[in-house]
Length: 239
Image (cartoon, rainbow, N blue to C red; front, side):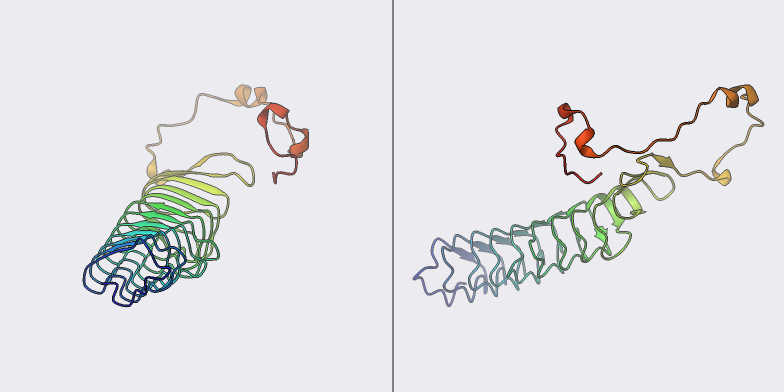
């Protein structure tokens, strides 16, 4: 453990386990903790990071302020710019490597399993964020949740065994039933509807008189600089 640490600038590190921090040498301030066989195995100049578990952050070289807990968590995160990630669980963030910012939070076995260079994503639960490799600012909460593409951004999915609906959408549900909204367009919630799901009981009692009472309108969204000031929305906000 820490076999090559020079000690001149690489201070306040804790290495426990076979080959933990084995090549650490010369970080600006150290402050790392590696516990487990091969934990932080390749870390030469990492700073203020925590690696706990077999192969946790094994390929990390220069990453800063990362937390990798669990077997193979953050396994290949080299970390030149991929900092401030939190990966907790067996295989969490296992493929993450080289994001321009990092700052991903993956908690659960195989959480964020497909992420390679995506930034600022949140995956909470077993096998969340499946297929999303390079997208940013996504949120997946539940289990067995799939991104709508490998590069989608700003997609929110909550539930289990469902896939997202694309950029600027929220989807909540399970494999048989869900609701969705596209906040970038009409911002109207939609529900899955199929005759095969329904026990049809006959014609509705609401007839033409009810239809004639409806008063549909046309509208367009005002620019943000015309919204009430108490909403505290920036005047240049994208709407």
